[in-house]
Length: 330
Image 1 (cartoon, one colour):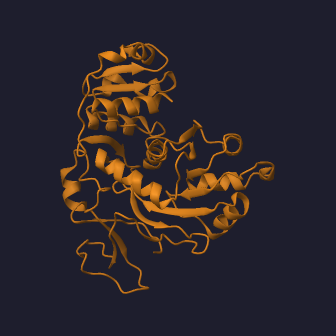
Image 2: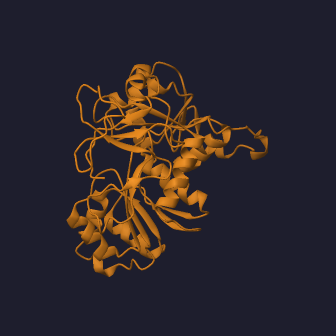
Image 3: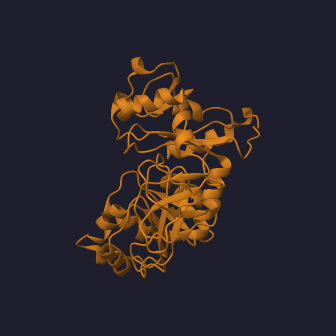
């Protein structure tokens, strides 16, 4: 809950929110902190050990949720709300910086503007057929683009987010039933844990209308099992990235298992010849049925404009088209 409050506070202030994955190593966490040059760092007692102040290259304000530090979260809440002066925030101002997972090296900061976040959320709501005042399960962490999208989509629809701090399949099912959750957006591994429960039939998923997934492919067997157990009206595969939220969307995954679908409403997609030297361009499109490499147009309101403090990487990867290295069937 505190992270969500802090997110909205930074947005209202015109500041930039940058959640860090605490499951990473101390070295990676300190790399991200130093890369950000943050003015404030917020932490809990349980995560304070991850922050070694001597390894931080500057002196930020340290804010604790439930311990002792420069200032506490409780002290911030005691402030006078009438002291706040309205800040004008423009669509091209930065909203958030998310760090990539670092699977291919050191994590890279992905700065995203208010326009990026609004456009991505609007497209997500449209693609997933969400409705006014829907209720979603908020379990994906905010350091992941899926977590931010789940939060913002419910805000846009005047909906409700039911928080689950740590994923547990039984707790998730109980909340979906008791809170009458209408839509969930999860990793395939989470769906696998849910439908594999031995007592899954005791839960009522009658109000669950939409299930969607991203972050990894889903096997044909798991797709069929999810349809059988959860019986959603809409079952959707969303293929995207931190850099450009939506690439493609498949709204008929039950009939086209393994398919990444068609370009999102803001996107242009091409499949070009795969080439390790990266000498191929958007002109080198492969014929239908031929395996190639996916590229996504950077001319999209959902697309970032370059990596944080990484001009060389930005110059190499972020031209007119962003080159991806993941294999999906379109």
